[in-house]
Amino acid sequence: MVDTSVNLSGLVLDNPIIPASGTFGFGQEYKDFYDINILGSISFKGTTVDMRFGNMQPRIAECTAGLINSVGLQNPGLEKVISEELPNLAKIYHKKVIANISGFSIDEYVKCAEAMNEVDMVGIIEVNVSCPNVHNGGMAYGVCPKSVSEVTKAVKKVTSKPVYIKLSPNVTDIAEIAKACEHSGADGISMINTLLGMRIDIRKKAPVIANKMGGFSGPAIFPIALRMVYQVANAVKIPIIGMGGVSSTSDVIEMMMAGATAVQIGAANLVNPFICKEIIDSLPSKMQELNIEKLSDIIGIVK
Image (tube, rainbow, N blue to C red; front, side, top):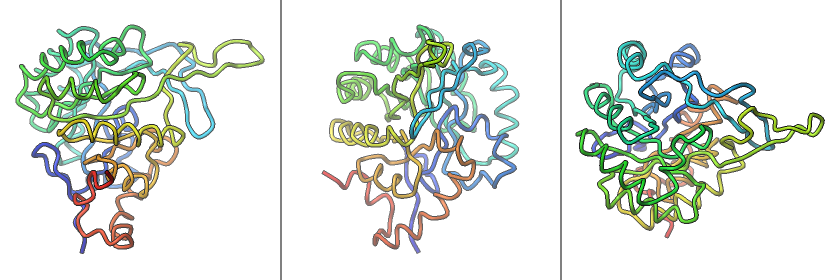
């Protein structure tokens, strides 16, 4: 027998596998594929105070080993998420979830955090300061230690739940940003969000997506994400939820060895809706193959 459980700031997960925000909706799209209760947790669709229709279409551009998205935080808004989406999710998923929140001002971050603090099924609040596919949204907060610190402090004041700050890779020194979060009271770090990318239609001589640029995700970014998780793990003492191009059980093991306590699966869900189940099912045999009895023992084992 092997032990796949991990501990995120007091929240014990059966396994470290978490679908990343924006790639799993509110769980309804996946419930007919498999019993989603096998998941360690779920980071549900990024929520803003007001309903958002998102960016203009086209929003998706395919790339070699990945894709660019510019959905633009489309969501039904804070009130509807709490009154409708989360109660519906609770009917099909019976564990604590991760509330991913975004804002266009510190007041909006605070309002979202205050509301999610009152939701019993929310175990962790994941603060997105790093969305590269929304005009004037998130990016300004995610690229500067001072602004990230301000958001972190403001959110921590209004919630008793663990606060994880989701970082942008589109910065000069991600370790400095992470240290600013830690010094400001963050309980953990989620990383990385998508890289900033672009595609051009050479026949139309125009960008493929209406927003011109968007978030690049998929297997191509895994080595970058792994490197950044390793750097941050060696710079802070708080837990890390690692993500970025993860698409296999071996990727999960690598990410944890680099320093992640749990691992989010993003774009791979859009390619293979069974990917999280397949990884969870194969984790025990991969652990046995590598002589790992307790998964938590490998966290940050590579120095």
